[in-house]
Image (cartoon, rainbow, N blue to C red; front, side, top):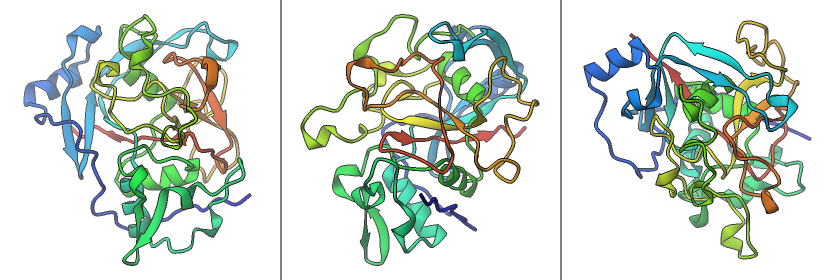
Length: 301
């Protein structure tokens, strides 16, 4: 099984989904983000386009990380963020990833063979006028079939990074520590996508942002269902501690399983939970048709 670690010198632009329009945060929003919040209601979503990508500002604050759905989610414990950070409003799309591949100079897709026996690269992308482009069916959906190494490289080319699993969960839950991005009750209509029907158009991740009622407290979408999302974190037991070695880079540990969050579309019968506390993991050189990602950026004062 091969995995290409993509290297990019400059990524001048990426494709934004264009599904959400919002004013850039004001100075007062920055001040509030730095000062921190103690409840979800104390924060109004602040969205800004950064290098062509819509990102939501996540204020400093604390939340209860973990849950009671499985032993892997416990014990429930408090995690705090002293600094705000930015997170993508949407999962990375096919067109955005195609722009990355063109900037990275990827010409030969021979290394893109995946654990479920087919080439997701060829399914999503085609060469158009000498460059990669999303095939028509995938022009607005979340990119999939991406390894942890590839997702890490993409984010780095944007001057960003993968979120830690604590950042991902805080952005989904907030200080109120909600069970779902929208509240504490399961509303199936708010789940981005959870099961593929027989029709071929359903057998792919959904168009990003199509379930606005599923928005989280900071204004990000598709945190429940659609694709699993890579995080930077090694899969280790709780309590979460960013300083205990679980956030090492690939230069230190390139093979141990990394955490996935958010659940995915291809799970008939709701086999996997869609709660914000649910954890999954996979080796970083592997992927499937239902694995994608989003990026975060550090907040600069």
